[in-house]
Image (cartoon, rainbow, N blue to C red; front, top):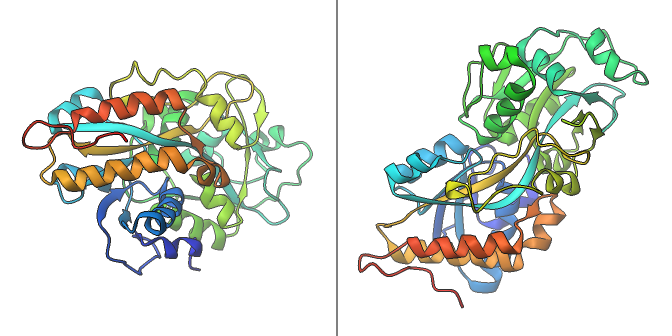
Length: 347
């Protein structure tokens, strides 16, 4: 199955399944979480400006490594780097959009949004402690759903992934056993399951494997017509993954007060909050080897903030608030050429 075929026209390169490369003027690599919206933005931006974007959707871990190695103009990660890490590598960091990570299942007769889970139960599934779909813990949350006595097949990421970081950070916050045995990171030692590369790979495996459960950014679940679950949030309310629920999780975020705007949005309070919400971030050198390339990249993201909100909403991402964008663009003044002048000048 070729995943997300609509993205092929955007002139991007995805590591898992999209192989047609198009010459590009801006180079980036990293998180698969924002790939659908970066593709949509790239297509529109190329038509408007003639400037292309070559983005390799290789996972957050790969994006961090590539920007550290200075092989791309920008890296992309869903796990924000801390202030000390940014300073060590001379990097600026800023968020582009907010989205949600969703559990998805392949259960015969179970449609999208019919199955409900909570964090503690989800962690037990991924720990291998809950092995069948009709387990009492799942049945208790789904009194009106006919659950089969079918083995659960866990599908997880095999690559370094910001989506995995958000997912495992949430499980660590809701299940002490998960926190002590596995923890939160872009790559972890999974107790059980099948590994797959990228959000694309997880979507492909879940789509083809009966009785499976995986996790991915919501746009992938929608575009691949996979059945997402509902989740009980920190307030005990069972919610659907929607842009409104993602936005609710970010409502009280302290963007400006966090180094590199690196806010974590998992397990946030609020009756309407989706519990596995996260922003996705760009990494760029403050003293880029090629200042003109850095300037082009920042122009692209300035355009995306100004004109890309509708496209983001169509894919169920949440655009950054205007006041946050103002602060982000002020922070870009730290990205300077060899004469000490900012490479980005606002129009």
